[in-house]
Amino acid sequence: AAVATSIDTTGVFVHLFEWSHSDVADECENFLAPMGYNGVQVSPPNEHITGSEWWTRYQPVTYNLTSRSGSPGEFQDMVDRCTAVGVDIVVDAVVNHMAAGGGGSGVAGTSYSNRQFPDYDQTDFHHTSDLDTNCAVTDYTNQQDVQECDLVGLPDLDTSSSKVQDTIAGYLNGLWDMGVKGFRIDAAKHQEASQMNGYISQLPDEALVFGEVIEGGNEAVKPEMYEPYMMVTEFDWAQDVAPNVISEGKLQYLSTVGESWGLIPSETAVIFTDNHDTQRGNAPLTYKDGEEYNMLNLFMLASTYGYPKVMSSYYFTDHDQGPPSAGANEDTCGNGSDWVCEHRWPGIAGLVNWRKTAVAGESGKPSMDNWASSDDGNTVAFSRGGAAFVVLNRAGNDVSGTYKTGLPAGDYCNVIVGSDKDCETVTVNGDGTVDVTTQSMTAVAIHTGALA
Ligand code: AAO
Image (tube, rainbow, N blue to C red):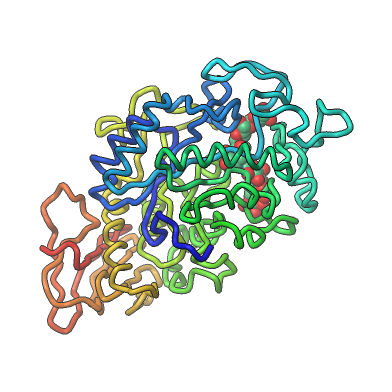
């Protein structure tokens, strides 16, 4: 944990949920690199069960790199092209379990039967006295139940076994050798943390690893248990912050978001507005909420807590609905029926390079300076690192104000407005203040990397 990961966690990454490898490669070159994103989380790239539902990707059959997103060759091409432009690939690693059910064949044609796969036999799974069966996860107050029974019917690998640890390490190290730099460990909560370290410790120290651990009230397994070994998802960030965007008058309370709110330490936290599960579940805001969702993203990117992951979705009406058949590109992004591409929304995209400039100005100690909030609590402004400044306006009306920016006098471009438009000039006065009007439900953001 003392070693810096090869992906800079002061930056921003994006989850291109269910994008094909070739579309991800194009997006790295055409959009993500120029806008400053430093990583992409891709859907599980290994062989999974057949079926059109999105969640078939969470039922592994083998660790061969054939999936709905493409072939092994396409995977390698994506890694090469993204890495070449400074965007690292983060793989969603499904290693807690294998495919459910009596058997079948995977998308690459590999057959499997009940709790038996080419890489694993029945003794590699937790089981009852009968090798064919196991208990089901039912009691989240019981650590053993959570970590040794089957999650939603998925055969639970025995992570205490050195054979299992070595097999998982083989999969992840193979990806590392191909150029993958990070791993989301799916269902980490269902694996005992020190046993997980049996495979994590076999990876290069520079690998970024974060575990998916949902904090639940009165549950036995807690995010803190994983912090010695990896970064951890902080699901409470969105649950706690979003209500302050949804209700009027509460943006003013966001100056202290972080450990004092009961969140895990900032350096270990991966944060997100919603993810592929919560947008189909209990996320307070998703793309379907439009402006308020956008505002939550803007605050996430401008503020100092955690390593932010932008969610990039496809339009869906049904929980199980799989991805669009159309490829993701400039024409199908935001067309109302294929890909939402939240990561391309102008304000969200504009704040990614803004954040880089902010961090570079801070020399290691992130802080929100010159914090100001309006009397009604709907409008806040702050600066970072003497290099970046933002106003966020949640009010139903435009708001004019004079704010301290912490920036050198000069003419800057408002990066919230589309980069394809002409620069909207914002002038910082000789005394470092700015007089600016911020439109309803949007922001004004300037930084020393985008001068008019
Ligand atoms: C599919 C079918 C199933 C079928 C199964 C096997 O849908 O009917 O039984 O196949 O044939 C995804 C889908 C599943 C799908 C699965 C496999 O979501 O529907 O099953 O692929 O294809 C728990 C885990 C967490 C997990 C989450 C979904 O702890 O790890 O459930 N997420 C990951 C992935 C997810 C994937 C899997 C794991 C499996 O991101 O996409 O499943 O690979 C509480 C607990 C949490 C628990 C949730 C949901 O959370 O604390 O640990 O997550 O409940 O059960 C508040 C509370 C919080 C609570 C939360 C949500 O925030 O504070 O405690 O609300 O209610």
